[in-house]
Amino acid sequence: MDAIPAPIKLLIGAAGIFACYAYSATLTEDVYKTRYGEEQEKFQYTLLTLLFERGISALVGLLGIMLFGGSGLKVPYMDITYSGVTQSLAMYGSNEALRFVSFPTQVLGKSCKMVPVMAGGVLLGGKKFSALEYLQVALITAGVCIFNLFGKSKAGGADSSYGLALIGFSLLMDAVTGGLQDRVKVRTKELNAGAPSSKPTTHESMMYTNAAGCAVIAVVGFATGEITAGFAFCGRHPQVLTAIAIYSLASAMGQNFIYYTITNFNPLVLTTVTTTRKIFTTVYSVFRDPSNSLNTMQWSGCAAVFLGLALDIVRNYMKSSAAGAAKKKDAPASPSKPKRSAKAS
Image (cartoon, rainbow, N blue to C red):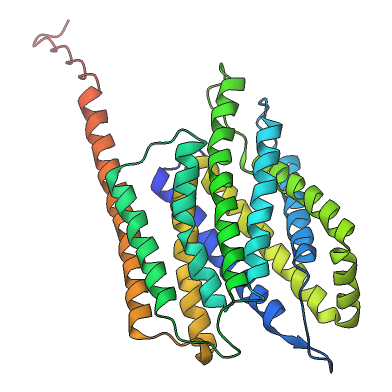
């Protein structure tokens, strides 16, 4: 896989993330927004969805290790466990928010994720970012703020402050997760100083992270009774369980590409990809449900987000060009070929 150029690796990861999560996101919206049965009940058991999603993803990661093998490296299990827990908490806040805010608000709110991921990388992972990267993040964040500040009231009521607080909590957990993911890479290199490529495989990262998150969710969910109540709800409305299972499988497939991307790049690159995907998902949601129509200022906010993403493309191009020029400069001169004698020996 190392022979594959970095732009192709990024294209593979981005394409997989777009395809899998565009489908799973629409299922998630349907699960939380649909009213079921004569009682017109709404699904409100987020820990049950996370238990399925984390559990299935951990099993897919284990299957990947069995099929393709592991890295054979010493792995910083505790750092991976911590990142799995904070990642699950971030997903809890994001999914639970769907009960209290519209889908476009949730998606665009989570698009601010680049800011906490960058902050977490600096504070916890010791990362450094360029001025262009800071400008990119500023543009995307400004676009998201414009989108939310100038949003029209949605059908069914305005977004609640509690729902927005849940998104804020999710972003905080994203900051911690991003920093811990950077730390996992650093710790793996420290534990395997003599190894030529000191990083866990895609499926090792996927299995360990999801297994840790699943264990915590199971303990909390059963202790609070939410998972038991969620299964009871699915017993009354079996179509919900089917949708959750399909959503979890799609998410597990998407996680293959997420961990493929995080293994080959850094958390900020991954967040840029997932942010782009969320913008397209938001636009799709708008066309899918006319009650979510956007006004001129909101479209301007989306334009600012896309401009920020375009800057990322420019930054990567400049970085690639500079690396290519440096490689040519440092390459040893090719030895001159000896002149052949005019006369045959």
